[in-house]
Length: 92
Image (cartoon, rainbow, N blue to C red; front, side, top):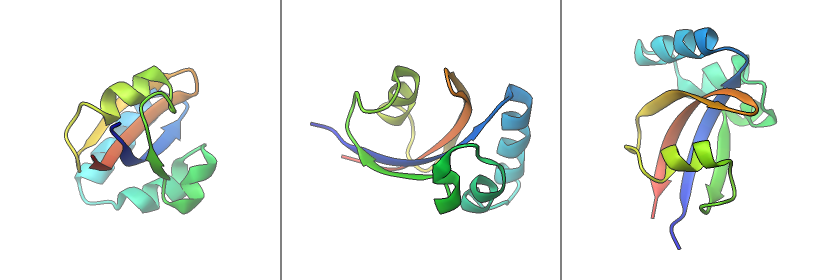
């Protein structure tokens, strides 16, 4: 079964998500941005979610984590929780 590890930043609006993505692409550290801005408790740990398998996250999240490029910041991705930036750190 495939598994992946990722980190994310969860915010309330698409606009805020895009602003943070631009800042990260301009050089801001993902983990620092997560600590400052993420609404998810994982933000305190730099947004790290650890390793997980398909079906353990919401479908919108899985679609990105198990199909998109590793090491790139993806988003905004809208889920029932808000808007996410996702960085896939590994996948097997």
